[in-house]
Length: 98
Image (tube, rainbow, N blue to C red; front, side, top):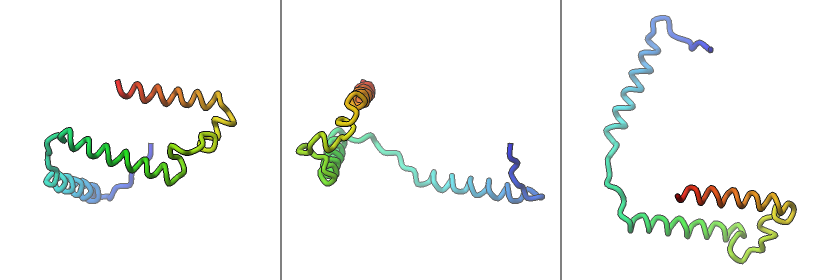
């Protein structure tokens, strides 16, 4: 185990602890409890995220019109491995929804 350097008087350690406690107090003063979001707010945010992801995929050439063999070279080179990866991801998504 590595020993941490200490000031002979212990002043350094106390200063660090005092500073950490002051920071924690400052943060606690700025934390505000909010009510849970309304369904409409969640729907709005999910819609924004979905649109942004779709635009990003389009910019990268991965939109709905993209040729699957160009988008996923693994499916062309190693079809069995690609199927295993796909099944694994689908299973994880399915399990996260239940």
